[in-house]
Structures are given as structure tokens and as C-alpha cells.
Length: 218
Image (cartoon, rainbow, N blue to C red; front, side, top):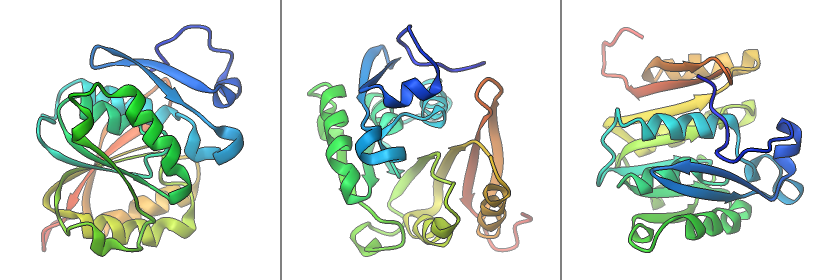
């Protein structure tokens, strides 16, 4: 099914990017996610992939209670916020210039009892990874983070560092270009990857990845 923001009155995708906020309903709560396209560009708006991933998490096929979750390239933070509302302990990460908006969205949308379960931290892929314990996360989330080819090597290094054998990675993305398929090929060289979901209305796909055991057929 197609997935759309909670509030009515959409004026098209382009207009939605320039709205100061996007509204949704997840985990029984209305959410108002601030956006700052003019100041921060692609990191500061809610993309379809984030909505599709959040809806997948809410569906409950993964038990998030007390799970340690890392969101990479969190941007406005919607999937990480939804994971925290569903009981996870979430670390939402992005570049330094995106953190102020990300922190505001976490603060605005989590009730007091859930705020201690969410932390916002700077993470530039491939850099300062020692500040994040190796293999410490049960679940790693990424929505629309596969689009710049020059970031692929650093993203893969980051995934290899933060993932243990038990870690599940969920990547939600729309495969627009050949370079996006190239990233999946690079990922499959290191992880066992399968497609979990294709949302026909948005053409967003969710991929599951786990560190490949030696001798796995990829």
C-alpha cells in the first residue's frame, strides 16, 4: 500500500519538502517533525523511505522493546523516534550540522518517559568509529542513505564496525540509479542481504542485511 503523511492537505511532493513541518501518526501518537530544506537540504526533510521504514517498525514484526538501535544518517529522525516510542533504546546519528534539528525533533516528539531512551550523537561515516562500541547494536536503521557514491566505502566501514553477527540492518531506499544497485552489490560482498518489502505506492524497498558468516552463499 502507499504510505502518506498523517495530516491531510498535501500540495505535492515539492511543496511538502518546503513545509516547516510534516505531521504523522505512529505508535498511537501524533508526531510533528520539523523540516529545514532551505538551511540543510536533503538531511532536513522527511522522505518516503523514512515513512515506509517507520510503518514497517510499527507493524511489529520486530520486537523493539529494550533493543539497542542505531539510526545512521537520521536527518529529521522519524524512524528513530518511532523506534523509541516502541520501546527501543535508540542512538540517532548524523553530521554535526544536522544535530540541532534532530535534537529538536526528538525533544518535541517523545514523551518524558521515552526521552531517556533516545540519544543524539554526531557520526560522520567512517570517522571516529572508536567512540561507538564495536558490534554493540541489535538493530541498525537507515532510510534514503544510499545515494552518494563517494560515501559508499565509509558507510560500509561504519556498518562493519557497528554490527555484530546478531545485528539486523534495515535499509529503506528507492533504487534510482545504477550506483544504488552498485552499493547493494558491495553490501552483499560483506553481508547476507534480502529484500523484505517493496512499497508499490512509493517504490521504496526495505532490505535486511546481516553480517555474512564465512562460507555463506551471497
